[in-house]
Length: 113
Length: 116
Image (cartoon, rainbow over all chains, first blue to last red; front, top):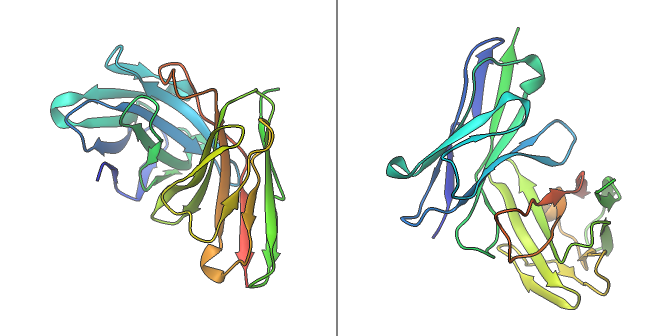
């Protein structure tokens, strides 16, 4: 079955450190890829999306993600973590145009002072 | 302001007591869907609707019903709730299915349901 996998349910970084959240998809045909963020007690907000244009996608709040077909990956990065980045992050994919959004299990990011 | 609203935000109920969670969007979106979020499982789609009077099952439809009588509203109905339906529920909407490249899926704030 088509799926998306996020490695690590919890990631902890120090303030100012690099943030790296991993996401891998399971298809030989590149899908549409998304990262969402969920702050405590809130809904999901789109951070960025890949739709077959540039492989390096820049999103809001200083986040970016790089699509790597050879690795079937779409990892999310931010050079310097802020305390306000503490949240849960979801990778999601659409495997065909018009298809449904399939979510990964989520990664909770903690930022230590 | 473009938004998806859900009510109630929090609900505690007992097994077997019918309940409805409302969802409304003000963006004239065709596509709406319901998800449940459980720890370690991410979000799983319950039902979706491609337009008025067009609904279909998602991945975990058992125990749920939906209706789409108007474009803006997509209520989720639990006819006889059970404790395994205790979860966080999200409604979402998207313009349509024909333009994934530009469509963004908007999410409501969530409804935390506890079934005792």
